[in-house]
Amino acid sequence: MTETNVMRYLLALLVAAAAMSVGTVQAKGFGVEGLTAQQTATHELVVDTTGILNNDERGAVSNVILDFYVGPRASITSLRWDVNVTAYAGSYLSEMKITFSDTLGNGVTFTPGNGDDFDGTADYAGFQELGELGRIFAVGTDGILRLEFHDGFKDLAFDEPEGVWNSGTLTFGIAPVPEPPAVAMMLGGLLLAATAFGRRHS
Image 1 (tube, rainbow, N blue to C red):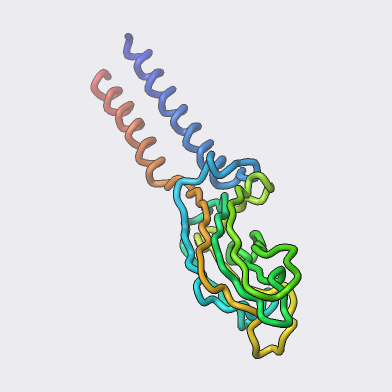
Image 2: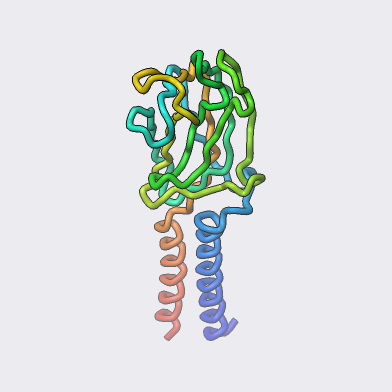
């Protein structure tokens, strides 16, 4: 192989690696609507719901809000739930909700007791790939996944909770965006190899 051909080969490798890395970042960080949990999820976040009160409608200052760092632009791809909840007399199980979103409020609202328009205590369990609903979303550059526990309608007095999440877990499938330093190191290594080869044979 001539010196010119070797240089062309190394340059082609460099260009291919750059194109591949950019494509990966775009697929996992931005074009996520059509992806399923199997295609993207690489780890999970498990949240214990034991003892969390269900206080008021979404956005109320009395609501319980939990923030979790999952990585900048990470995509939330699935939800698994296994919970026991109680709606107090005068409220409904169908009104107990959780919204998981980025810090701007863009995300998904989930109602484990959907359709159960009565009070009492119940167990709910299941799994949903958000890709099947077209609801996969990415958190912001701050990397925060925000969970807000809230009610669908404030039935009771404003100083009284509407219900309580007695026990159980919510498990979120998360697909992180590849770290830019890893891509930069790969491209830098190929560039150094090409430069060294050119100097040795000039």
